Amino acid sequence: MRLILAVILLVITTSFGQPKELQKEERCPICGMSVSPKDKLLSQLKLRDGSYKFFESPKHALKFYFLNQDKVLEIWVKDYSTGKWIDGKLAYYVIIEDGPMGPDLASFSTKLSATKFTKKEKVYSFKDLTKELIEKLDIHTH
Image 1 (tube, rainbow, N blue to C red):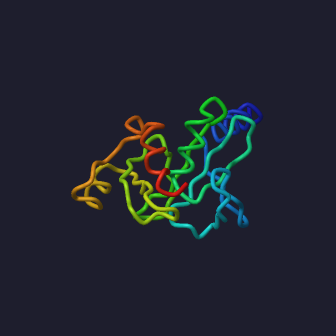
Image 2: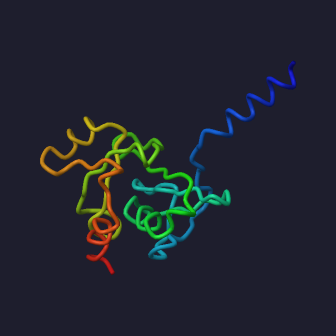
Image 3: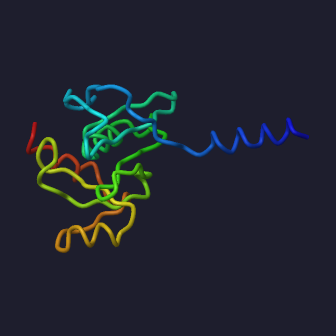
């Protein structure tokens, strides 16, 4: 009986995705910029092969996602207000002008916190984000 419970617990704990903490500086796969655990907009993708890709911001994480959707299992972004990891597909996004490489996206765990932050800019849910919007944000830097 204990073995069955242990197996069930193992399946449950590994079925729900979790972000991985960045242990050392890495390079963004999109722009080559150094990515640090201290980056306020730090974002990551878990790929289907179990590996993780880290990005200096949601803009580049989402650019990678739109180019490689079939390879991406999970999207993790940091809540701009709290710094805590949140599921990127459940997050709300606001365009900001002062990202690491120009215009970018700040992510929030609730629509209310995103709305309070922006007051005038549009708040996007994940399903509102498009490859074209991300490209438009990125065109200012490449």
